[in-house]
Length: 217
Image (cartoon, rainbow, N blue to C red; front, side):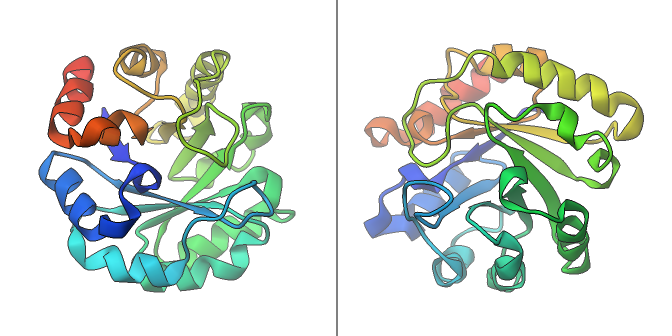
């Protein structure tokens, strides 16, 4: 599939609208929006008001990744602000099935995110209900971290799990993705690649996107 979802966490926050326009023109597939609360992860980013403000700058799907405690309390706000898909962390929610159902009722695509050390086996029963799974390949909270190698085995295991119960499942990878490893991740079974630093580095957005796309060809 080879979807590229630039993370605006690495964009210029003083010019978010322009950067979102730039990644859209450069051939991005999704816009990845990292939401952090300073509690679930040691950083704070943006909320629904910012998503609403930047929504007019692109017609691409907005992929909102909630790295927050009690994410279900904010599903409706982010959907109203313009999120097309929302993922929440398995580790942050007690009633997983209920949370997934809430997202479906809101008309957005439902995803679950797993921290690096959380095994994909926890998804066995809920997998048929999901549109996508986001595997963190760094510990969430900050951009620019190094890729955790054992994520590759998690991708392969999850793809095998999904063959029977959810063959259309999109497997998304976030953390340390760049031109040096994106092809390997695709070969392991990943479909969508969140890239922050690899897209916005040196402000060479088009050049960086082209390089990533070449590796997926």
